[in-house]
Length: 346
Image (spheres, helix red, strand yellow):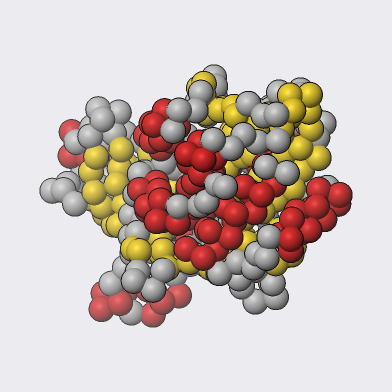
């Protein structure tokens, strides 16, 4: 019987969160997943888009299944080098400017070097700007990067190798507490990548094959809307997107549970498949929720919009403060992994 290695889930979540991978700059995170798959003895290939596609042969090869999660995260790029040596940024992915004010960051140059900095509003000092500081909107026009380097001009910044178009990653501040919480930026969707790896580990170590041949897709453009578009072979009949469950007011999702999302901004997910997942969760005695997210999309919805002809569902661990400084409990990771394992082996 396959069992989930919970410390492995946590360790992989922490390791992945600490790898900078804003959408468009995901090679290091993809390499990490590839290394883990290789250790687990799972065949994979890199797609032209830079994603990973692995396959687990199943007992039934006539109707395939697929599971997707994404390694790309929120981030930014250098939009402009200001005359005073500060950087104007442009956002990658959907998040509020308020959620990154005061955050440490790294600028990744084309030379392969990094320069650290801090994201601030342009009128950052209340002692200098008074009420103007408090009233300033936290928009791209009013946010800038203060570099940790002696720069006072565009020329000084250029000498560091920084140019327009360089990626900016945010310090994830990843912490695994003694009480079982992992708090970090980018748990969306590094936590679910870790869940897939944990399920693969459990199956490989126990010699359990999936009931149906299953494709594992590690997406790298989900945060900008086209992650798993065109990703799956025509033989795939069902797709499970693993992505965070948004915890908050008006939601049933919980930090200690797995959630089956039945509708998001793209519309309802497949009724039959979603109900089957609920039944599996109940049969397994899992702590699960059913929820709806009005401001949300997934790799499955991107693939459906691209013409995918398959049933699709969305599941994931409850994560608090989505697209901000997020938090998940290892219980939710375990519940999600157990649901995926049960689904793949039924």
